[in-house]
Image 1 (cartoon, rainbow, N blue to C red):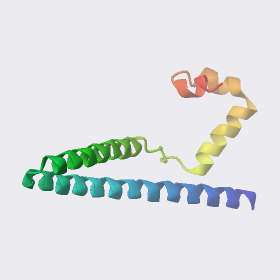
Image 2: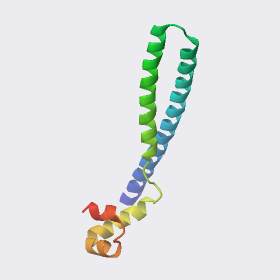
Image 3: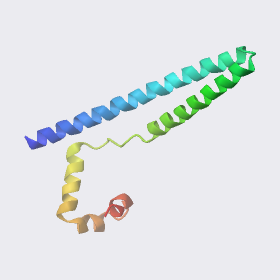
Image 4: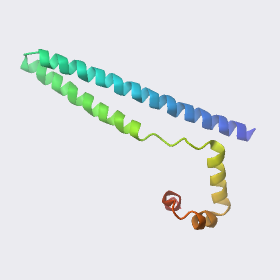
Amino acid sequence: MVRISRTTSWDKQSHYLVMRWQEQKQALKNVNVTINKLTDRMIDTTSTAAIKAYEMKLEKLESQKALIAENLANKPDRSKDFDTRFRTALNFLANPWILRVFEPRKRPARSRL
């Protein structure tokens, strides 16, 4: 029963991350569309005040775009299932020396100690 609740929780978290990533992709598309529209408006206008306002909006949108792109680039690795990760953690807690000796190439595991 505990295992079922943990895997259910794991699946919910994994589903949430996938949905969040898809929302970020959609937000990036929306920002790109808005940037294109503002650029077209800026090209069509002749007023210097309007051009400055459009430039300020474009700068804000570009910073949003960079932030969203960074969030998309930092997508967590969900290639392993819950059982694999849970067993690795329990094996490490049972005997950390074995994992350190037999897996010397995995630096992140060593640095977490």
